[in-house]
Length: 390
Image 1 (cartoon, rainbow, N blue to C red):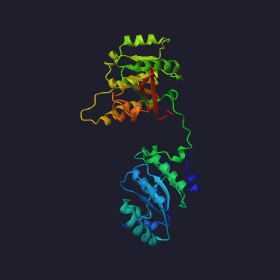
Image 2 (cartoon, one colour):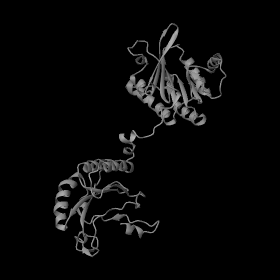
Image 3 (tube, rainbow, N blue to C red):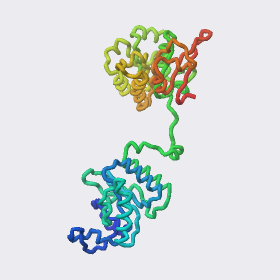
Image 4 (cartoon, one colour):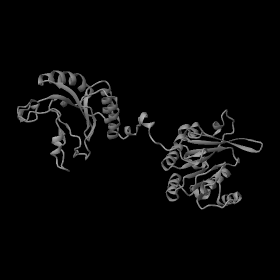
């Protein structure tokens, strides 16, 4: 093989096919009686059967070959054809043509492979396979060697390596899987926070009863985040802020900012209720503002004013979940924190987070949740929970 590779000039085109079983180099006959140098009568060594499924999706082929290798089938190599199939070289080691017909054709293929959906033409000893490294003209895809185990050793490491390689090459969805043993050795950064230990990046909900100071708290958060100041005794990470005030006009927002008494930074971008009425696609507005100002904190006050009407006949839990999904996607893709201001129901609940208005779809989709509890001694309790909140 190395001698043959040495004869290839750099940049030359590789042939598309290779015949795993060596040939005599002499002229033989086809089944129809015509001359051929590549017929079964020209085969010298009957070492491998080329097995190719016909019409089965790549993920199903993957599952079959993983199971076959784990079950002890002597698979020496697997090649991705650059198209819709895998070519597997199953080690046979027959001594002559008669032995090939008895074992490979009549037993292995007829009784096992063909009923499983393998191409019947694979029974020929002179069957060609795709040559790894060559480019398939029809698709422009490279034909790749995915698995190589010439001695067919029972080696789990090679099997796992095969799974990962074939997943990347053959199916984009399967390529997303992560082996647990690899995961524990990965270097993964810590969660990002707008306010450490309180507000992580992601989708969050602040809930409380009416007139409990939710909007005031949000303005304090906006000021702290836009200046890198302190919020609830924690140093906020500085970022531009987008504030969607669905229930307040510009006059009220101006008065509140003035009463907070801090120098007002330029990195808080406010849309008041009158401006927001003119915006048809509010999700698009968030994306545009992120692109323009790099806002990593988006405050939506309130959730109910932001969400579209629930379609008639739609399940309430399903509606809440579908509403939260695009917001969570924006937060995850951009590394931002989106905080939805919401209400609590009037009826009490055993757990304070169960008082959030709506179904469990809202709390379930949120990465963190803040809830105002009962006022005690003139002080308002704030309960915080989340996937990364300890």
